[in-house]
Image 1 (spheres, chains in turn yellow, brown):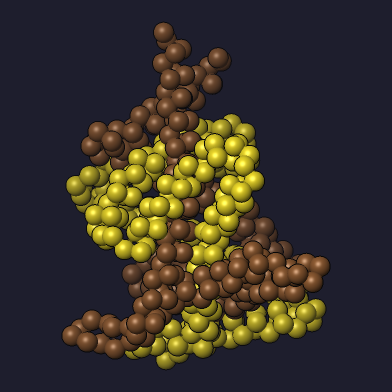
Image 2 (spheres, chains in turn red, orange; image 1 turned 90 degrees about the vertical axis):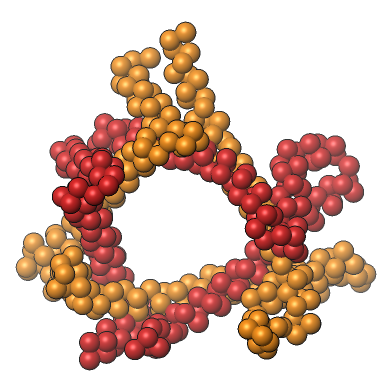
Length: 204
Length: 225
């Protein structure tokens, strides 16, 4: 019974939304109401997740766990931002500038760090996975697209070369299309399993 | 440069240096910077959610019992209370109902979104290359267009075969038929090409970010010398 009620609610809500989307415009009103509920519930779920994060860090501070200085940093930065946001308002330009001054440089520097990490990770792929169709094509493709990214070959303005470049630039789309269709089919199967209560039922 | 700009620049350079200290093997300053990012982002996200979603869609309709949205707002209120109960040890089970509701609706949205937004456009765009108008011009076959259309079709099919894991278990190892293995290898080449191109795109963005961060530090140093 503990599992049955959530399964019924999940299946019912999904089927109602599916029916509302197929029977337009009759179902539009129901769809709009259910989507509003979903927006609210998803937002509350996010707030609960944030609250859980802060509570976990507070627990670590109370227990004096190793590295609790970082926990204090997180909690202090969270509370300070929250208080300032309540005092000034989320749309206040000074508050937005302050938040931007903290978030933007860290995010940019982290992304810059990714460039360095990616270089070593690319080398690691060959060491860990050896030479295979996947790794060789990955390496060759990376080098080719790095060269094409310079724009030097395009500037030579040789019609035959430009045609070859056009074909080469279209090649990643083939793999991407295959991956997208594969992911789409997988997602579709997963959605149907959730809708008909089959997902997780093998764990019972 | 005025005072607020200078303060912003000092904060920016300090945080950038804290992140880059990771390269020197430091974990403390890097940890402080990332924990500041998590704390500030989480608080900002919470504030935006409360002000832009919870207040207008949940609290305001409930504040007006005679309004049209009062009864409709009771459903998300109950589901939200059940979600909040999951924060307490005894209330973890209560979260199953709102999560099931979210899962069901999102699954339905995924079915429609994936079929209409991903599968149908991708398959139609692939098959659209086989339209007679695209393959023939002035009653003459366009061999390059035919070759390109065939390559795309075979490429996509071979990529799908990479994830086809049907075979026989021999000595604990999955052995696939030779045909599947061959087609799958071609698919792997196409996936490798795609990942290579994506890698370069991401690498270029990361490199631009790195240059931007370094130029910020240089700008700060040039203020004093």
